[in-house]
Image 1 (spheres, rainbow, N blue to C red):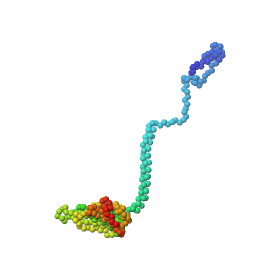
Image 2: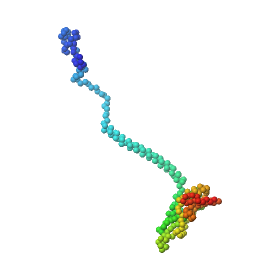
Image 3: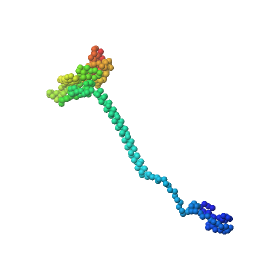
Image 4: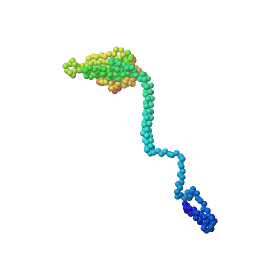
Length: 293
């Protein structure tokens, strides 16, 4: 018998097949009772039964499904906000470091400036950038501008520089025994002459010192020989003199002027000590030209 077909009842006595309704066996005449099958049995035996089997109920809470649109929105927000948060963090770190550097500068700068920056000093209308400690070549252009005035001005040329009592590579104008002088040839148009191209010369000397600084003027020929500005500046010439054997702490008188023989400017250093020592330094190359003990 194939699975899923009806079971054929048989006689319990002779095992002959009988009808579904039961009754007497047509072969042996024995009374046959066919047992009734319950509905559950028939449902399990007959899969094509009309009764619909009861479905199992899942009592667990339903799961919420996230739509693809919501996931895209969340990803977009993360992509936009992440760089902004990172940039804000970088800016905060940079500002914190800058504030720290500014605070250190505020603490350090006043002390350093008060220790190294001298008070301003103005003599004869000339503002000295380093106060009373003067480097003569640093003030040369300021002094030239001081005398380059007047509508009839043609040119201002250097004649010489004189420093008295220089020490430690500077001219200390706080010392009353020191002074610094600049001599210029100021060339102007001669308004008294009949020819418009006539020139007249004036020698102007500015003497910078604490007590009684002065400006002197005298008329000289416009053709007076002048001195080229030094390429070997004051500080380099001083080092050359010291390298030649003069002590760095020696007090000296220094003159920059024209070497008429070679038509060049030279620095002449002369010590105050006895015996006097003299060094002549080339004003262009800083070479030592003359050594006198």
